Length: 174
Image (tube, rainbow, N blue to C red; front, side):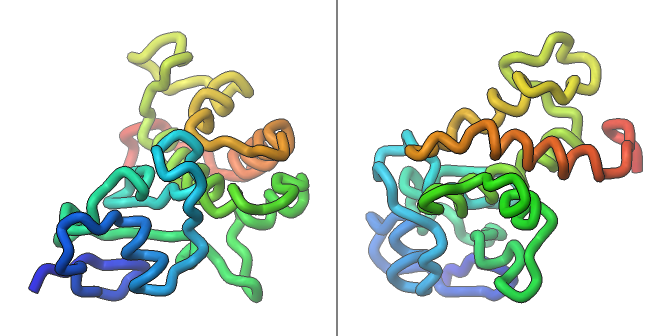
């Protein structure tokens, strides 16, 4: 039987090869933190982390994730023990209605790893060096996650706080 690890627990993948990762997570596994927004990969509300990379779960078939490690918002802190990112979102009012917030936080968590790994983005000046963590860089990296309420400046402020609190390690250093 094909399985995938979701938030640290192995689950059998659905038998229907047409089932999206989003629908499997929400409807079959009851992980409703991942939201169905546009269902076309344009809004980012369904963002989850698969093997360390953020993806739009509405565009991916569940059966394609055999053996993968999938993280949803449910694995990033809890109401009793918020993650650093979640605390920063609260402090900076990085949400209003909250519908996009799970996808925003999953995307932000993956963004932090991308920065730590020295990945470039479309606005990185010199792709051969560690990217400068400017507001422009953060906005570009979060551009796949839309917020209908317009909390973008607050989201960027939350990311800046978390980044400022992280130890500075050169990309590629162990």
